[in-house]
Image (cartoon, rainbow, N blue to C red; front, side, top):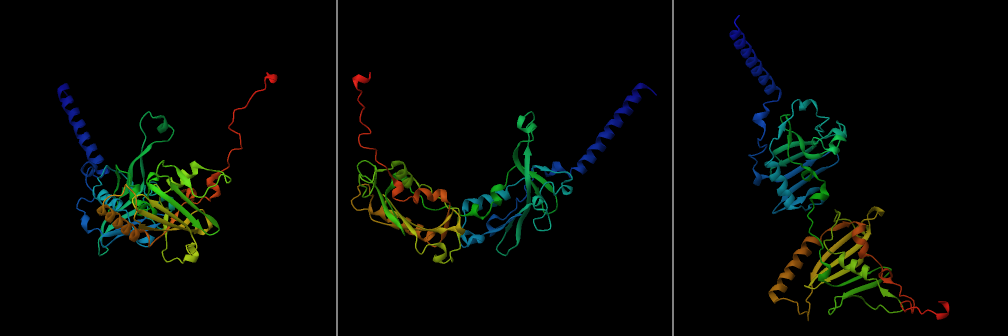
Length: 384
């Protein structure tokens, strides 16, 4: 056979083999090129979503729409973070296929994509995220598995088994396993992560006075001197000692973006929560808002405590910084809204947030230096 014919025959064999290989690869990959970039729920009717249902190996959670607000059903219908609700619904709608995992249905345990439930090992279970409409019909449903870890080439941490999460493995309702390029941890947080964070917040510089009183403790009143901004402990005598300025400052700073850990059952009796005989903290803000915190018993004899909160408005007579009557009306309205939002609930606060607020009067005083301690010492010439 001529050399030219042999070359044509060899080229034909190569082309035929290449086409056959591509066909097999395409079948094995589940038509991956056609799926990559496809939106998972692009036709999701966002405005019809009435509930977010989360099922994990450790908890079940429902965040649902109640009238004009969203609430956390597992936390006595406490208001939910609207921003988080919107983030989850829109984020699920905008998810796109980053990669189809060939043979993923054979690796469900390894990828933590088994159905959540007692029939499967906990460390191999997925978290289910589902959106439902007002008639409890599923609008979107997906199983979220373990992180997709990226290990950069040549990276020392990667060589030691490290890396960083760059997405999640997902299992779709038809069984397809894919990778998405977003981490979805915020969407499947526990109930505490969904609670609206509106709470007591007063910058230290805005506070005019704080008082703390309660059973078996001496009342504390700390005010800000109008001419110097110095914090003054009421009725402190020289014989008692000197004010501990650092601790007075931490008392005033303790209300700046104060946060709670969780909410308790509002039906708990006051005798159980200790709110029948609480420590009462009142914080007067210069603009007229007054926060009232009732600090009760420890939760299950632990470090956290039950706390009730209320807000009221007080006219600040003689304050040159007071705004017009219209501004005062705005503050009254703000106080009324905060009262309606916060007063029906029993909160659980961590001990580290309450520590600077619960110090006794004695703990706000430090010993005065001995008489003459600051005087210069004289040196006897005979000693030189």
